[in-house]
Image 1: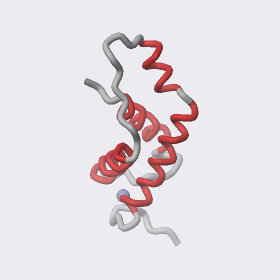
Image 2 (image 1 turned 45 degrees about the vertical axis):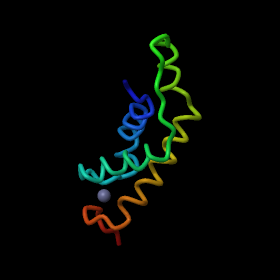
Image 3 (image 1 turned 90 degrees about the vertical axis):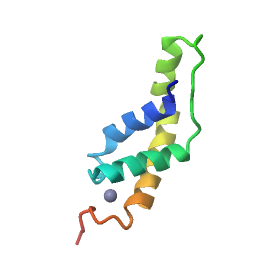
Length: 89
Ligand SMILES: [Zn+2]
């Protein structure tokens, strides 16, 4: 059983982690993904679902925007007091 929302969170996270300067600490990375996933509905496909349906789920533009929003919220929560975050200014 695979949660496709988890796959999508991983994909979007990898796309934005450098762009948004998300800290690369492994614990933070896990906590950010877990926090985002807790705020997103899980998505499981039935065995009758086609590869096309699964692909369409992962490529849905609006869904990716929603996932990105949850990830950036999670970064704020997880890394607001994170000691690994680079101090600015
Ligand atoms: Zn952090």
